[in-house]
Length: 451
Ligand SMILES: Nc1nc2c(ncn2[C@@H]2O[C@H](COP(=O)(O)OP(=O)(O)OP(=O)(O)O)[C@@H](O)[C@H]2O)c(=O)[nH]1
Ligand SMILES: [Mg+2]
Image 1 (cartoon, rainbow, N blue to C red):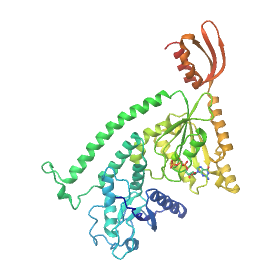
Image 2 (image 1 turned 90 degrees about the vertical axis):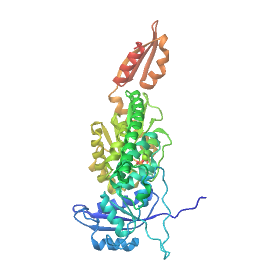
Image 3 (image 1 turned 180 degrees about the vertical axis):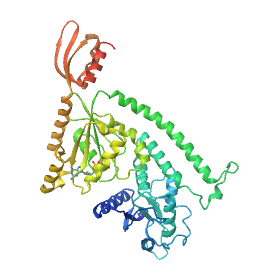
Image 4 (image 1 turned 120 degrees about the horizontal axis):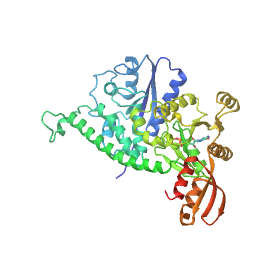
């Protein structure tokens, strides 16, 4: 029987470190709030503190910790509370298939206290434990939240394998002896603790996943090789910048657009519509975020290889976001990390419909080469289409293909991969004057010659 479960409530915790201004700090907490909402939790409030760093035992100082504990119903001191036997967050991470938030427990006094404390930084397993101890709540950090969102949103087999690997790597160092550990002793080798067993299981599972992933990736690499000499554009950028919206507008495809972080995790490739000649392929890719967990960058590298193999990157930015500069910086860093910063790119200042004239002028002055547009404006999208076509036009060359009558089957490929300027016939076959990328022409020359 299904019962409607109350939405879990969460308190956000942010440390404003030296050198981080108020605007950046607020924006970061707001973004964390959106991530938490994407997980299906309700943000019940936040606790911030200015501190030199996040290295302390409990992340917060004792006063702030007490303030936080008052909200969650904890003691406010480490050791003053029996730690949750095993956090539900942990259980969820360990359970292969859990997807829904758990039902919050009712408090005896009828007040529903927040069950989660979510820290806007990557914290160590022992800091998480101490915080759980002092607050009585389940503690997750930014990395844990992102890993969990990826886990829920991954659809393709490749993305699911990648996320499970990243998730196991996140969980492994956070494993600890559980209160009920002794109940789970079954067939454990001599001298081996439950913890070792868990760790060994994780290692085995990781090895298994790695093998499966290699298999899947061989297939996608083959698909990419088949598209190698095609005209390819990749949409890249911060999460929620509007990549999928542009993808829809440029290709007429029905990819998911949502006011959510990480709506897209799988790369989609579609042809530009109306058709360009030769055909242009557009890829929509996974978005970036501040402090994207390293394991996720690594695991999504193959998804982002689409970007690496494109001839043109459209670097999409939400120009209406006050922190767009920081988002731009994050995206640049990730592209650099995956080696895609050598691919020619154009900056797209999207959502310009939400920017007033004065701010537009400032953007124009700051980024004179950028393309300002709204993915919701058909005229803007049509102009972008022309820009894309002009980009490729510049690197295309003209050539002649002589297609013997016995090889007419290649005609479809020729029409897709080049623009046919003229067609003549003689005794040997069909003579086509075409314009296309040098690589495509070379491939077709080989094909018509029977190679
Ligand atoms: N006002 C306005 N809203 C836009 C524009 N482009 C996109 N949006 C909105 O921004 C939100 C995010 O758009 P998406 O296209 O899903 O963004 P994305 O970059 O694909 O995001 P992820 O897949 O989550 O990384 C949606 O609510 C869109 O409707 C625009 O030009 N103007
Ligand atoms: Mg998207």
